[in-house]
Length: 394
Image 1 (cartoon, helix red, strand yellow):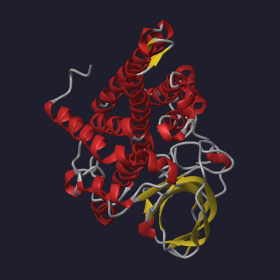
Image 2: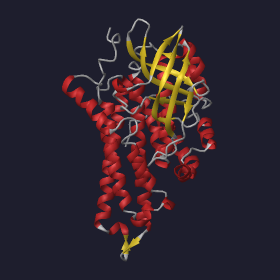
Image 3: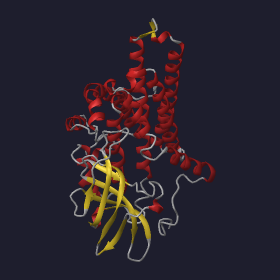
Image 4: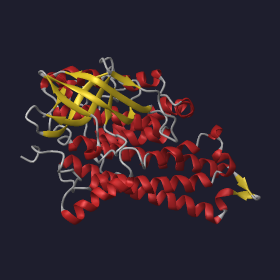
């Protein structure tokens, strides 16, 4: 599999596999139990250069392509899908958004510290009215002198110990034009508050919870891109993030398959080796086939993305199909563990829970199928609410 890898990609994947086995695996159950990623593991990730993978070299990163990021994330997810999922936000979504929308001053201010893991970031869009349906959002930035005042609240922000937040919100200029923009908010900004973390089914190492803005002052140099269209103009960052997120789903299923194969080979059941029972072998073979198919779809799409020839809607196709398929695989594999599979002590049921969380996080499967359907039927890759933006189409 993946015989097209370059020498550099193969070396990067092997490095990630070693890091996952030696550094991540020992913490995997602890991350799930304590619902936090240990600082010492984050420090190790920074030492290995994981935070700067997708950041250009001129800002202190390695500048690898999205395919290489997916290779790394898949290996990490085999040990801990939760840890890998947390890193995708730090590796791809946040720094790429700054790279695409930011001024040179903003890039120099944010990206070098992001590349070293000194500045952890969070990306916040979801609101009670719906994540993708921005027409229903209420968080808004209003003009205030030469800057802005931000009011509202967000749900399910993957924040962890973030210092910098990229906040999507409705925006309005003095002349009445309304749009959707992206703002930089620092944790210490007056009027910004972070609520206690939620307890989640899975993906527990990525601390998640609501945040709120009460008349937060936003300076002009903390607006990313155009104030009216910044929220719509970093699609490349969102697509790359979706692909890296999907890589965690593939790694999640592969990690559980690897552990299940070891378990089956060691266990005797009903007086014979467990693997000799016909349904067992069938389920294992089916899991391998489905994971292989998902991996092929992911990397075919990622390579097309890197070449600039990815078909519209394919990132969403990967997110919906691979997320659902790998969750089904994890459920079937967990069944092979019997009673021990539902015991936390074995550390395997977290794979099933993480796989389900990944069907919902970064947009539920149904939302992504709706995006794909819109592309297939009407030739529009996204569902942009036209009533929000008066000037973006100009």
